[in-house]
Image 1 (cartoon, rainbow, N blue to C red):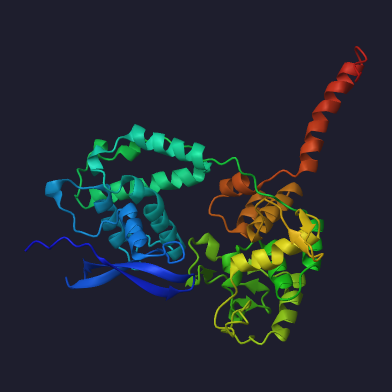
Image 2: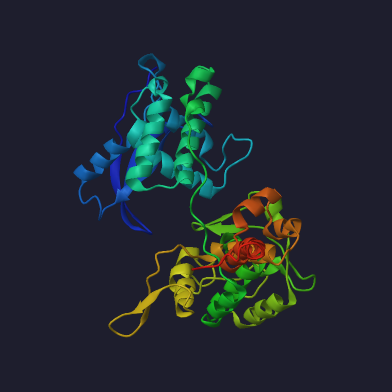
Length: 412
């Protein structure tokens, strides 16, 4: 018996971000075939003040809540919902399950970009050149970086491949227009790196535990999600090792993505001294306690990365004179630098420093836990300005020395 088409319904719910409109609809549970409720957050009530505007947002998103009916032509929205129900769940059918941060990122791309633009389009009627034109328009009008645009292209392509795998669209090359969509993947962005002297100046402006956390990130190259995911049982002072067993992002505990990222990190005696001192001070020092536990939540969760950056790391960097700042009316220092700078820049800085002092690339790769040394050299070997000046100077001195022997060339 065919299922009736549904419209769904809206409710207000209190969430961490504030009062939120949540869209409810019914879907078929795969395990037993029963019809159950599903829900999708639509937006904050302060942005959508009444039900009319909330429904308008639902319509704008083109949420595909009804089953695919091949007789009327499969839409991109139909396939996107099918893809999300089978692949973007914690227990997905994928051979390589996605991390929860990846799932959230793909959901945002579908919800905010792909469904509003392509949701109602017949899937086999979308042409490669119109997708390229759309991506080009986004780049010009919203100044989006190439990797962001490529992410949209890749998610769209995954929806098509998923449809082909399930036989919802033909398994022919021409049925997946994304195979012919061209998009640059490289970015013109160059991460800001700091010297060891600058890192020391930043650390001097921090108190515990932010000081030890920053030193840990700067000295080991650990991503902030892995630093915050550490428990005291992971820190082996006797063997001078830090074991990376979990991550902490978006309020959830996750697992490291690759075999290389699960490798232990050397615990240098200098860092061990700071960490041991912090362990003796903190109220949460049992083996199962978080190393950087939230005091507000009484140690039940780790700290939040973006708040640590905004409330501690960037102000300390501004106080050190590395980021620009100004004094407000009360004489307080206010950071106002437009450049991106966070804990990940410490990882870039470590790699750049190690390459600069001629550390073997394989050693740098192992320390940063990259699966491929090419990735290490491509993304993290930032030449510092002094090195660039010296490199240019070598060539200029060679040219001018040769010229001086012949014609006495000099600057006028």
